[in-house]
Image (cartoon, rainbow, N blue to C red; front, side, top):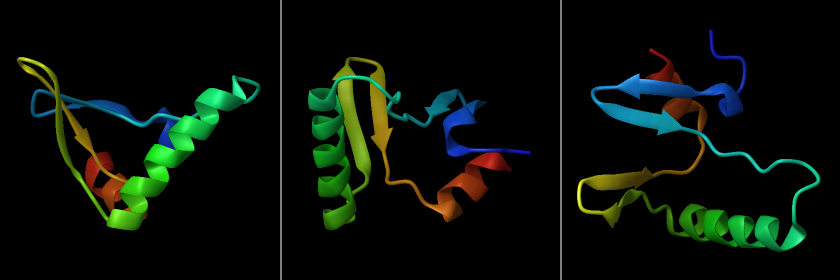
Length: 73
């Protein structure tokens, strides 16, 4: 059973699913930037793909209990 979002790393239909969490004690500047990005996605209720390079796509979605439940199955 999934104990926390931070522990979620799975291979699912050829896609790696990860949850990122900020390490306590890390740079405040980096944390501020990460929070701004998260707020923008949460506020706009946006999800979607970002292509990092050809063949490498990143699917972005906000944290929610429903998403965790779906991925944990």
